[in-house]
Amino acid sequence: MDDTLITVTDLVSHYGDFKVLDGVSFEVQRGEIFLIIGGSGCGKSTLLKHMCGLLKPTSGTILFNGKNVAHMDGDELSEMQHTIGIAFQSSGLFNSMTVGENVAMPMREFGGVAPNLIDDLVRFKLSLVGLAHAQYLMPGELSGGMRKRAGLARAIAMDPMLVYFDEPSAGLDPIMAAGLDDLILKLKRLLKMTFVIVTHELESIHRVADRILMLDMGKVIFCGTLEEAQQSPVTRLRQFFDRQPDEFISQRAAT
Image (cartoon, rainbow, N blue to C red; front, side, top):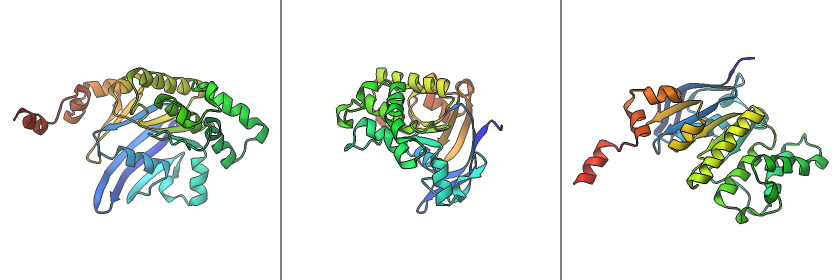
């Protein structure tokens, strides 16, 4: 089997006349934790939405398991989306449903799971993320970190080969963020999942990254391992890892 799960080639995307992504190309390997980093507004979340099939690009290709996501019809896209999990920045839980009902929703919606097994599978998925006790709680009764983990439990409900995670550590304190990082590593190890994660958290990058893609103004300026990133001479990458402000910001702050 080819180790390459996703191949993105010359991806271009626009919001109206504004070019958000400009010739983006890279590959994601099976079983790796692939991080997408960059400054605010560089196109990270837009790229993730294209990879999920939620947006159509202006041009370019996104191959998932050898099939072009951008050219899929509704049925093909639905079939592809059954094999992936998506964990949103806000957790994406439905507040009118219990945590267990949220996790069960993909099992009921996509089918293929015997109804008498759903409750047991929900408990198992919640136990994987440390929330076995929360099955009958409402999302509003959970802390921010618990909601993130519940969203991840729902994302892995159908045993996907790939999980997309948008800003998993956003809004979490350092202890909660570290716990979520450890959970991602555990799921990779136990379930052999591939993760594509948008983040700007340096601690998380150092803890979980197998490889890193950096975007700047819609272009790829780096793609490689954490070790290669730390040794790279690319100025914008060095700014990011060394937490250096832009020169014009420093000059304005000094006046």
